[in-house]
Image (cartoon, rainbow, N blue to C red; front, side, top):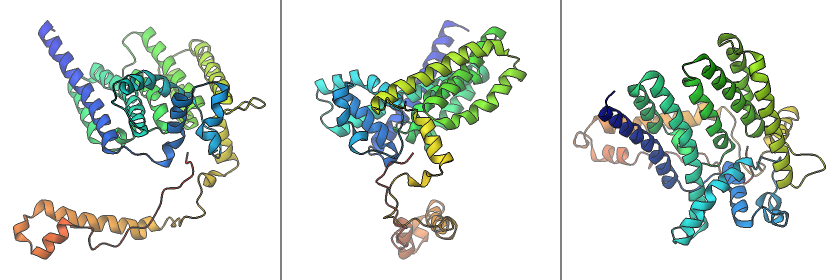
Length: 344
């Protein structure tokens, strides 16, 4: 490949990476407010930045003032606060940020940037294995879907687990070209999955379990090559969450492991319905989605779709007005207020 072709390829790669970043950032500014599910990590990051890490600062933290049902990990919020500290100081010094909303947006921009880095690693792995065209299609799919760009900058537990999972996914897409490199990368993949399951999302064990026999039998990675590093990651991850979260929850008599507490509360004790305060809300039955909501959805789609196919001149004034304001004559949707409690 010539030097000029290499430069063109580098420029295209940078543009693809920037497009993912800009789309993620645009979703943050388009929807600057948050939901109750994001409250714990958002408040935790704010409290770390606002009050500090000393034991005297802990009583001011939101999770002590408004305690939740079960504890959650502070590790993600601690990392996000560390990554947001310097940009926050710079923006505050120059008067760019002058309100708590600005602080929230900056923290979410930092979170989105970290998660975009994981997607960039996947895009580059796709390019190395399948070519530039496929990586461009991957970028197009990532930028045009709604779910990932919208949630990538929101302080949910899933979004803190997303970066290590995507880093592992990039190694799985392109594990390397030599046998020793492939073995090392598959070992790192298992370690990332296991550590993330211990700290952030226990459900990732469902991703770890099928990957383990795949690595052992299909790619012939010997257990003696996996066990030492795997045990190191497992013990280190468990020790980190026990020490850090026990400190932030001020619970040293019995160490706090948030993910284990969540499993015991939701699965073993069967109390998942106690997340939040639902007593004052009208929760519709499951059949509502099929008997009412789905019908309303298709009704609105029927009203919107003809507008794309028929010019307004071919429609009566009344029909044109209905297409222009399809919800004007529709029934009011079911009132489902956000729950004031904390949801997992």
